[in-house]
Image (cartoon, rainbow, N blue to C red):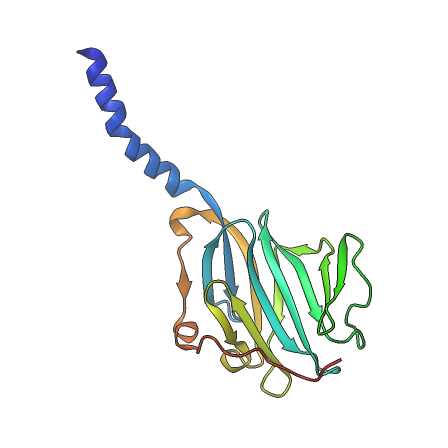
Length: 186
């Protein structure tokens, strides 16, 4: 009889122990804030979660696309796509990466650059025309939503219980599926 009561106690306490452990489990959280520190977007992310920024280079007037991935609590530059290598854009393969020329894009992968956070300057409809693709929410015209602002993009570790999905009204009402901004060509 004693063994049965011990087993019942164990079975009944497992869900409580599981919920306690899950609540304190630390996860990576992708977060964007504006210059005043207001939260724009937050989402718990898994290893390899990606987002992409796209803008028109101010001198070359060609699109530049940067893909970032989240790993080990850091934002990693995964890939940069350019159509020109003038005016400060990359022109050689990264030391720990590779170069691919598709004819339309010159793609630089790797390079081992990472940050806990970085600042993303958003232009306007004349300069920059910044867009961001947040998986799985699609591409948004950030130059219309955050004209001239400096956004702080970062990865934090926090308990799962606090790592909820958060989007402001601005992102919820923004049109999805917008076409990519285009500029000149090679």
